[in-house]
Image (cartoon, rainbow, N blue to C red; front, side, top):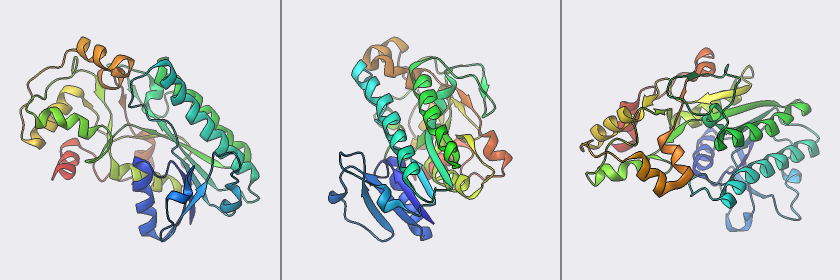
Length: 300
């Protein structure tokens, strides 16, 4: 299979690339600076999003496009940063659509990154792919606009899957290393109220669920990429403390976090209970469906 990945040099992109390499698939990673990245076995770097780039020439005959490109949300949300977060995702997705339009043979599938932030924040509601109402906060609006752009791939007959990622757990990147640090310093504890939902997923299941979506043509539209047992933040902290053999005792007040992080504090202080209903209906088998084994696998 021939697979193109935008954002292929990022956190999830690198894991996917390694996974598909091991399967013997041909990977094309779209990047602004291909000359700085020598080609590897089964991996070709293709220039895109530059003034004179024509990536479609290298991508004729591609089977799948995985679009992960976008500015990181893990920076303080100034007005300029918020503009980059939205525009980077829309720009990349429009370029993906332009590439699809230019290809003589269209790919069968577009896997477009998304996020559970689509649903907005709630301590009482449970969200599945059947939930149609989106939230109204900044992240929800970003995801809504992003998904609307990606959906246009269906105009070309391309099956489109919107992978709504939860909080991805990995021992080296993502949220977990930052969350572990206070516990390693013996100052870990409840963040804010502790009652906010934490819809998590192990990085191995992120990769495997994307592959599962590619292999199952009946899957289209939103796909919640989360474990089936979300946790309240305080319970997550207790499990993390247990896995690290550290105490869970020192509370971080909500006001202090808001002052320190600004609007970005919503990533820690707010959440949503999201279930992977569609994956379960299609009989996806989670490698890590419960939190404690997931954490132990990462921290062992």
